Image (tube, rainbow, N blue to C red; front, side, top):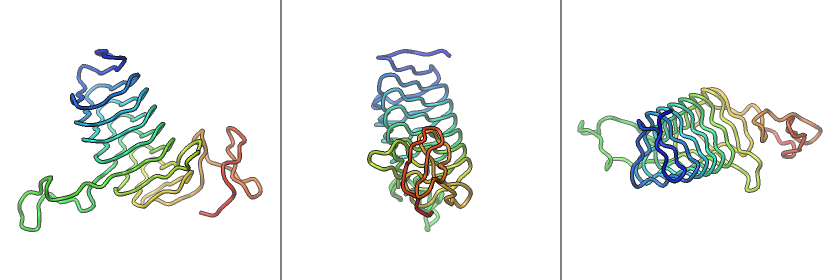
Length: 203
């Protein structure tokens, strides 16, 4: 990897980071990625190869954004969010190339809507999150929800929920390790830690 190092930020020579972007220490931005103006990236984060991070997007600390992920403004990611390869966070409710008068649609003709992702959530490879949507997290949660590979999510997701398929549907709950929680009496239990995550409730 050919790179330049500035204040402990590693930026590949083919990557582009706008001068107004706030990129925190410990962050790595890999080849051919573009980080637009006024982006904020928390410390110890990783932006994979060929990613796009739109103007004003905010990510927390220790986020991992994998190759070819597209994160459109005004997305907000909390700490420790994982975004898988090829995942897309959209921002247009009614995408069109032209207006009803047939003229090209420009930035002034629509209002971007964001995707908000809670702490510790996982977005699987090639998942599509259709804004506006929120992937929720409990205030003191060990980990957030999970959207499986290829899932299409168009409605808000509860803390710890595991969403798969298109359209997205919940099939269970996930814990800190990312593994599916198991039933134990009236609780859901993390198989990795043995800790009860939440009282058993239907989904």
